Length: 286
Image (cartoon, rainbow, N blue to C red; front, side, top):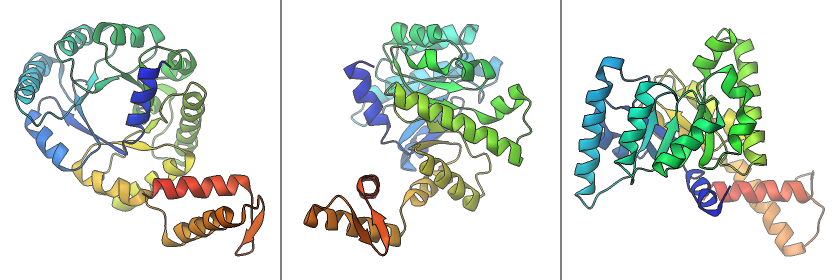
C-alpha cells in the first residue's frame, strides 16, 4: 500500500463498531452516530429494493449536501452494489458527487479490477466485502489493489454459495477458516485487520459477546453491526478481565525494572512473546 492507504488503514483499525443504516431511512443516520458507533455505513445494496434505489440515492445526496452546509459534518461510509450492475455504476456516479464521505464498501467483491475502478473513479478508500466463493478465491489478488484498505465478509451469502448449512458446527468451522484466510492475507499485504461479519440476532447479547471475543482473540479488530443496541456490547466484550490486566501490568513492570529476557510471574514462564502480548493488551485497554 502507499502511505495514504497506510494512514487510512491505521485509522479504520481503530473502529470497533461499523453500524449499517438503510439508505431508505436517512432519518436514522443521526441516531446511528448518537449510538457512539465508530463508523456509520449507509447501505444502498441489500437493504434497498431495486425499485427504491434511485429515490434512496436522492435522499442520500440531500443528506450529504445538508451536512456539508453545517459545522457538524460526520463522514459516512457507503455500501454500494455489486460491480457490473447498473446500480453499481449509478452508485459510483453518486460517490463522485460526495467526495467527503469516508469511503466505500464494495458488495460481493470478486475482482481486483472492480476495486481499482471504484478507487480510480471516486478517489475513495475501499473495503471489499467477500460474499462468494469466487471472492474468497481471489482475495490475494484483490489485496494487492491500490485503494483497498480492508476486507470484511458476508457469511450468510458465503454459506449459500458454498452450500454450507448456516447455524451449525460445520458452519462455525468454515467461518473460522474464512477469518483465518482474511487475517493472514490482510497481514501479508499490510491492510487493516479484517472486519467481522454481522451477528444477525440483535437481541442475543450473550451470543454477541461470545462472537466478539472469538474474533478478537483471532486478531480481528472490528465488526459489522445491524442494530444500535449491538454498538455498546462490542466494546464491552473487548475489555480484558481484571486478572488479565493485572497479570499484564506485572509482566511489563517486571521486565522494565529487571531488564531480564526470561523470568517467572505466578509460576508462569515469561519470555519475549509473552511480554509483547502483555504490552498489546495494555495498549488495547487504554
